Image 1 (tube, helix red, strand yellow):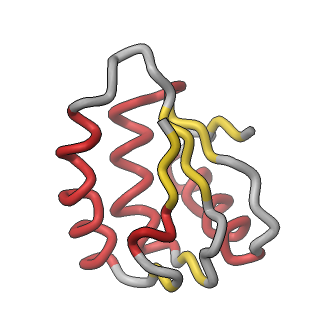
Image 2 (tube, one colour; image 1 turned 60 degrees about the vertical axis):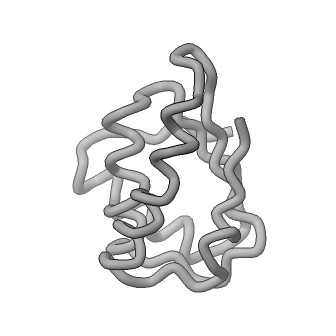
Length: 96
C-alpha cells in the first residue's frame, strides 16, 4: 500500500497534528494485511518537522518494522528530519 503524506497537508509541523494524522490513519492501517508493505511517499511535502514525523512515523516504525518503507525524496527537510529520527530512535528506516 502506498501512503501519500500530502493528504495530511503540505506543511507537516507539529506534534499535535502528527498525532491526529496517525489517529486518522489507524483505521486504514488496521486493514493492511500483516505481510504487506506500507510505502510512504513524500511527494508534494514542503516541510516535514521532526516533531510531526516523530508522532507519525516513529509509531509506524515500531508497529510495522521492516514493512514500513520510505520512498526517496529530494526535499531537504525530509532528509534532515529522517536523520534526526533515526538517531533519536536508534533504528533505521527502510528506504526505497
